[in-house]
Amino acid sequence: MAKRVYIKTYGCQMNVYDSARMAELLAPLGFTVTQTAKDADLVILNTCHIRERAAEKVYSELGKIRRMKAAKAGRGGRMIVAVAGCVAQAEGTEMMRRAACVDLVFGPQSYHRLPKLIARALRADGDRVLDTSFPVEPKFDFLPETTGPRDVATFLTVQEGCDKFCSFCVVPYTRGAEYSRPVIQVVAEARRLVRGGAREITLLGQNVNSYHGEGPDGREWRLGELIRKLAELAGLDRIRYTTSHPRDVDDELIAAHRDVPQLMPFLHLPMQSGSDHILAAMNRRHTVADYRRIVERLRSARSDLALSTDLIVGHPGESDLDHRATLDLVDEVCFAQAFSFKYSPRPGTPAASAPCQIPDDVKTQRLGELQLLLANQRRNFNAACIGRTLPVLLEKPGRHEGQLIGRSPYLQSVHVTAAAERVGEIVPALITAASANSLSASLAEVVRA
Ligand code: SAM
Ligand code: SF4
Image 1 (cartoon, helix red, strand yellow):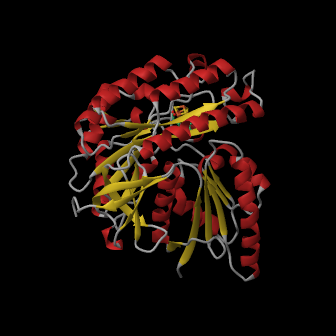
Image 2 (tube, rainbow, N blue to C red; image 1 turned 180 degrees about the vertical axis):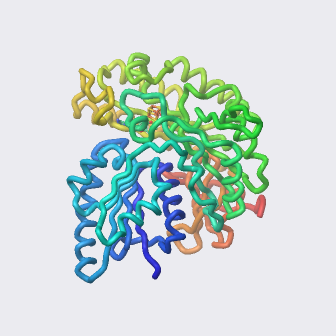
Image 3 (cartoon, helix red, strand yellow; image 1 turned 120 degrees about the vertical axis):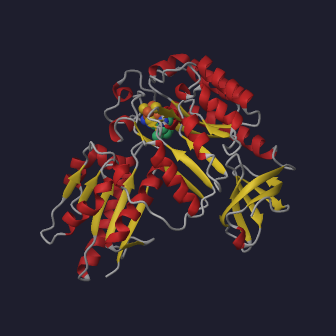
C-alpha cells in the first residue's frame, strides 16, 4: 500500500538538497511525499542548528507531531517520527530522552542508510534508532541516481563539512570534516538534472570554494576548474555556487568569473565583521584588507558582479569601534543583498564560553543600525535596475493569475505577466518597478526557448 512521508526542512539550501535526496531514497519503499503531517506514515524533521532556539523550535514542533501521532494511533494507524539534520547530530541522545514520540534520530552524514533505519523502526517490536555516526563511506556513493523532472533552478551538493572551526559556528561539529565529491560524480548528477529540465544549478557546500574533488585525471580539481567543466554541459545556462569563504577565493575561481558566461555575476561572500580584531577572534583567517582585495579582484574580473554577504553583530568582545568598522566596510563594499544576525552562543563552540559576551540589548541596537544600512543598499540596487532589460529565468507561477516569477542574474525575484507554459525559458525582461524584495518587469521577445 502507498505510504506517505512528510518532510519539514529547516535552515539552509543544503538541508533542502538533503530532504530531496531523502524523498528519493524512500520512493522505492513505496513512500510518496505529502504536504501535511496529519495523515503521514512517516514524519521527518530535517533540522538546522546554526542559530538561536533551533532545538526549542524542534521540540515545539514535536509537541504537535506527538498529538497527531496519538490521534493516528487512536484510529488504528501508525506514524513513525524521525529527526534528521544538525540538531539531531548535536542533541540526538538528549532528544531520544526528552521526546518519547521520536522513533528515529539520524545525522546529516547517515541519511543514505534511511531505508535500513526505517525498516528497523517499522519492526513491530518498536525499536527506537539513533544513528549520528560519521560513517567512513561517503554517503553520496549510496544515494540513488534519480531521473525525472526537475525544478528549472535546482541545487547540487558538491562539498560538505568544514575544517575551519570559526569560533561561533557548529558546522564542523554537526556536519563533520570537509569532503568533496569526485568531479565525475558531480558532472553525472548535473547532466541528469539538466536532462530533467534544470537550466540553472547552484553548487552547494558549507565551504563550497574549498572544493578539492578528485578529477578524472587523478589530480585534485578546485571549484573554478569544476565550473568550467560544468559549463560544457549543453542546456545548463546558469551556474551559481554558495556558500563561499573569502580565504578560499583563488585565482582560478576569479578567472572563472571572468571567462565563464554561464557563471552568474552574483556572489555570496560572507564578511561576518569589518574589524580585524573581531575577525581574528572569530578565527576567520582573513583580514579586512584581504576581503577588500578579493572584492576588488572579483570586480575587475567581472565588472557587473553584485555581492551578497553574511554578517554577525555582537560576537564576544565586539566594541562600539569594532561595530563602527563593520558599518564602514559595508558602506564601502556595498551589497545587493545580505543576511545579518545577532551572535547566538552555540553549545560546544569556543565563542560560547568566551569572556566579554555582549548584552542582548546592545546586539539588538547594533543589528538595527546594520540592517537599516543594508536595506538602503538593497533598495538602491533594485531601483538601479529600473529601465534595464535583464535576462530572467522563469521559474514558477506567481500568486496572481497569469503571473510568473523568475530570477534575474543577481538572484532578484522578478514578477512578469506570461503564460504558464513559458516556465523554464530565459527571457529578456524590461524592469519597470522595484521594491525592497522584488522587481516587476514586462516581457520583450524570447531569447532562447
Ligand atoms: N561557511 C559560511 C562562511 O564561512 O561564512 C557560513 C555558513 S553558516 C551555515 C551561515 C551563516 O550563519 C554564517 O555566515 C553566519 O553569519 C551565521 N552564523 C553561524 N553561526 C552563527 C552564530 N552562532 N550566531 C549568529 N550567526 C551565526
Ligand atoms: Fe562555519 Fe563557515 Fe566557519 Fe566553517 S567556515 S566554521 S561553516 S562559518
